[in-house]
Each structure stands twice: as structure tokens, then as C-alpha cells.
Length: 259
Image (cartoon, rainbow, N blue to C red; front, side, top):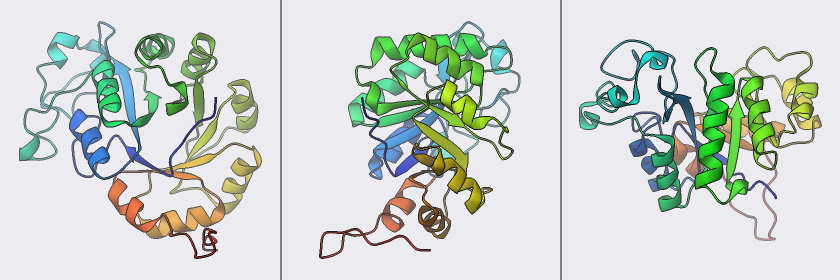
């Protein structure tokens, strides 16, 4: 079951143009021509999987507090768009199942990042994978990622045939290859703004596709592409789609990447 990953992946939808991790943002990415999007999933207090990044409500809603302390019925009343712009006042925080419906409607694939609140790593992965295995029939169009090795291991135990990705922060663990091998990952996702060329070469040597987050500058993307990066998470899918993918030469071969 091959992973059909795209070169350009909308980060939290198209989060430069619409509030992150909302249905509006996913639709925006699709409207721009993105075939893949990325979004974060965590749990409400009562265990409902929703699209949300932070542990706190402060940055992207009209209230404060911890998501882990908030019931889903209260999440439904939150405004997740006014912080971004007046045209998005009243935007709601979607559930994972609502997001999956939009993926199906728009023909999108997704990198779903399990983003557990502290102490809820296993529980969050269990709920996410239960929803996915019930609602989604094409595992080759879903990539499960997380910074939590517990969450990834739980996902692997529940659905070993689904694709997983190891997310690497700026400081890579010395044994990251062992972790990636144990988790049987399909990609390595790394911070494209901080990696060196040697880092990228080490990741490529692991033998799996390497994806970089979060890249909005086409020049930076072309540099990383020249180093061998396979795909990019971006807040601006339209920018990379129009600047990164090169036309095919007249002889049918793609141009070589820039050094």
C-alpha cells in the first residue's frame, strides 16, 4: 500500500488565508489546488477529537483556558475565526469527522498530526485511529504524524498498515533512526527552517521520503528541494504550487533541481 504524498501540503489547511485548523482553511487549500492538507487533532475534556493545535484556547479563540478542561458542548460555542479577521467571525472548531467529510467532498488527502494535551498521548491516538478506521477507506491517502512517540506507537498497534511519520524538532534525538525503524514510519518530517544540508542528507539516507515544515518562501523551498527534500508543508499552498513545481523539459525529463 504505497503512500501517494504530494509535493505541496497545506499547513493547517491554508493558514495564511483562513483561520488554521478550520473547515474554511481546508476548503481554501483545496480551492488553491492543493491535493494534501495537514491539520492537528486533540481531544476535548469529554474525549471528542477536534481540529486544534494549542493546549490553551487563548491564541485562536475568543476565550481563555485549557482545551483539556473544556467540554465539547462548550467548544461548539467558541469563535475560532475573529482572531484572524472580521470576515471569519463565528468560525467554528470542527470535529475530526467533519474534517474527514470535507476531505472526501474535495478529494483531498491529509497528514493528520496527533497533538495530545499533556498526559493524553495514548488516549488521543486511540480516539483518532478509531475514528479513522471507521470513517476512511483509503489508508494510502492518510499520513499519521506526531511528536509523541507514545501516540505513534499506539497508532501503530491499532492500525499497523496505516502510514506514520516521525516528526523531528530542531534538536534530533541521537537514536532517531532507531525510533523511526521501530515505528515503521513512511516519512521523516523535519523543520525545514533550521536543518542543515548534512541533516537533510542524514534523513535521506534513512531511505524514506523527507518532508519539510513550514516553508512559505519559494526560494527556501527550491534550496531544500535541491538538497533532496521531497515535499513541503506550507501556509501558502498557492505560492509554492506556482513557484516550486517546474515544467517538464521538451525531452520529457524534469529539470534538475538548483544546487
